[in-house]
Length: 207
Image (cartoon, rainbow, N blue to C red; front, side, top):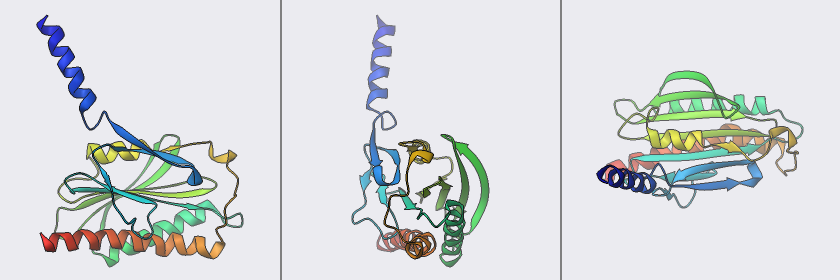
């Protein structure tokens, strides 16, 4: 009886844990879903350049995503290159040097992953880039008191990223122009990354 009671209590704890309960967010226009812990809250208003942004209940961790639809006369690979270039510029401008870069396949998608750390601070970020034939994606987790690359909550969000439909079945049915696409790939990312860093630094000064 004691063993059964212990197993029952353990099961209840797992069911109520943050890792066992997640909210699925669906973005039909950009063909993906992603799951965030139920205890995390949405950041409002959504920062410029981001599709959505959420933070942990204690404010120690932030996650945001960006997705850009590829116009018919543009290529996703070019957009991805521009987005990564914009990201690298934002890191230099905001004193968050990149300390590691690697490639990884997850959920049948190939990601380019960067690890960066604020100069003279413990703040870290893990940033994942990928693309399909019709979309370019950026996923970023920030941890201001630990290692974003190994944090289980941030990784659970990133690993939950899934396409709704196979990329090749999605048509280029969007009003995005080439100019808007290029601006979004470069300056949108610079704005989003820079704003999150400035937002966090402002909170630190008020604390």
